[in-house]
Each structure stands twice: as C-alpha cells, then as structure tokens.
Amino acid sequence: MRSEITIELGALRRNVATLLRVLEESELWAVVKANAYGHGAVECARAALDEGATALCLATVAEALALRRELPDARMLVMSPARQSELSAAREARLELVVSGGTIPEGVPLHLKLDTGMGRWGLSELPAPGRDVVGLMTHLATADTDHAFAREQLERFRAATEPFSHLTRHAANSAAALRLPESRFDAVRCGIALYGLSPFGEDPVVDGLEPVLTWRTEIAQARLLRAGESTGYGRGFVAETDTWIGILPIGYADGFRRDLTGTHVLVDGERCLVVGAVSMDATAIRLGRDHPPGTTVTLVGPGLPLEEHAQIAGTLTYELACGIDTPPTRSSRIFHGQD
Image (cartoon, rainbow, N blue to C red; front, side, top):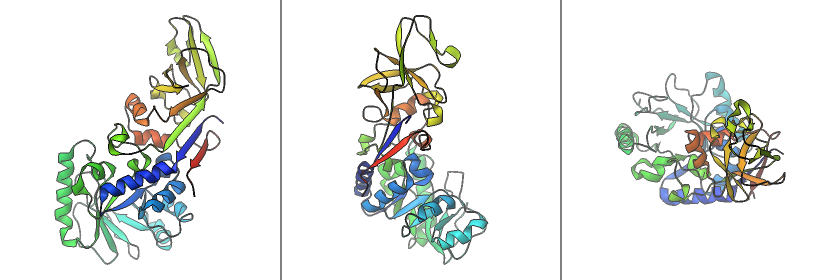
C-alpha cells in the first residue's frame, strides 16, 4: 500500500472531553462534514457521541443521509441550504435544517441563520420564529484572527435573538469556543478542534488538544544523485554535491500537495527536506545517507504536526486534512480505539 493513515479515536474522545470541560454548561455539537475533515465520519461521529457530544453537524443532506444509515438515533443538523427536492428525504430521516434565505420549509425542525457579518449564507433580518423553529444561529468570520469583530457579531446576534432565548442559540466554532466564552450560548459547533488541530495554526497542545491523524509512507527507492544531476519534473532540485535522494510513493493525488515542496518529513526520527516538484504519485526527499526500501517515513504525526505543513503551503490545516481523504485503492486507513 502506498501509505497508511491511522486515526486514534482515543485522542478524539479526549479532545471531546477537553472541549466539554471548557464549555461547562453548553452542549457540544460535533462537526463531521467532509468525512469528518478527512478523518472518517462514521467512526469519528460515534466516538464523539459516546464521549458526550449531543448532535452532529453536516454540510449537506446527502452527507447526513449517508450517516443516518449508520447512526439511526443521532441528532443531525444540515448546515448548508437544502434543495426543495431534498425536503422529503430530510423529513423522513429526521434531519434538522438551516434556513439561510428563501422559502421556509414546513414539517421539519429548523434553525434560522442570521448573517451578522460573515456575508455568506444567512438572513439579513431575523423573522419571528415559526412553530418548526428549534434553533437560532450565526457564523463567525474572524474568531481565529480578530476577536473585536467577532464580538461585534456576537452582540448583534445576542440582541436579535434575546426575545427568543427559549430556543437553542448557537454561534461558536472551534476558535470561538476555545477563546471567546461569550460565544458559547446553548451549544457550540466544533469541528477542527475535535481532530486535535489548532484553529489558530499553532501547536494544538496550547489548548490541550491531541492530533488524531497520523500519516506514514515508506521509502520506495533511495538513489545517489551526483553533483549536477536532478530529480523530478522541471529539474526543480539540482544536486550541488553528491546527494542521497529518497523517492516516496505518494504525491498530490494522495493529498501531499505540490506546494509542500520545502516542508519536512521524518525518516528514522531525522527531519528530511522535501525537494523538487511533488508529482501525482511520487515525492522526493533529501536524505542524510542511504536507506533501504521499506524504511518508514512519517508525513504527519508526532514531531511533525499538520500545522507545520500548512505554514509551508500557505494554507489552513482544514484544507490539508480534507485533502488526505484518499480512496482505499491509494492508502489504507486504520482506526484505533473502536469499541
């Protein structure tokens, strides 16, 4: 197999417990959209619910319906707008839907979403909630970067929803749940923190979180480049002196992106630089010496957090994690800590 992804469900459960301690009286709703950010929706949802999360948040009706087959009794909220053609299936599956505009459906539990500054999905004004409305919500644009603006959003939301405070109110994402106590209301929607990844791009241990995902591959071939020889498309790396190169059997089709050239991997505990152009099915690393084929290489794991790769790629851990969600024909996936 080209690579192996290990999901430590025990770490996820400990992250849930950590978040519940922070939240005190607020409910934790686990965001498991996009296959739990590439970690495995069914397994992660079960673990989160077992540890005390009270609802699951999905992006689409299709995601929720797929999960409903595995978790028939779980409370599920679909956060993106549902199409008219999906309403019947949503009712039958006992899903809760978010209303961000347009016609308000009937006969299904609803959450009215107020746009307080995200400028994306959301109602510009909050109508009087009808009988099907069970929740009121908003989404924060800068909880990880600009607390002042996030607090402005929260104050708008609080003022608009105060007359309906008997309904469940929820606004916080992972960043707000961890750093803005006033954002927690009745429930919070946590995604990235569940998986032990920092919404702030820093070491997750700062917030008591443990990374859930480890990703490993192996050296498929080691070769000695003589001075002046190169590796990969475009001759992106040319050896200045005789240099050992390791070829890894993974590439951007596996989620190891082209813009990760310049990041590091771990070979026998030694940090090795990714050199040349990452291709679809292969990546080159600079070795300190010859290594036999089959030598284990850690791409993400202890000593090599996903946050470090995100800094090199100039992106978010969210995007990198979702990109590792590869088909079983390219990588194996092992879940530790299943009941």
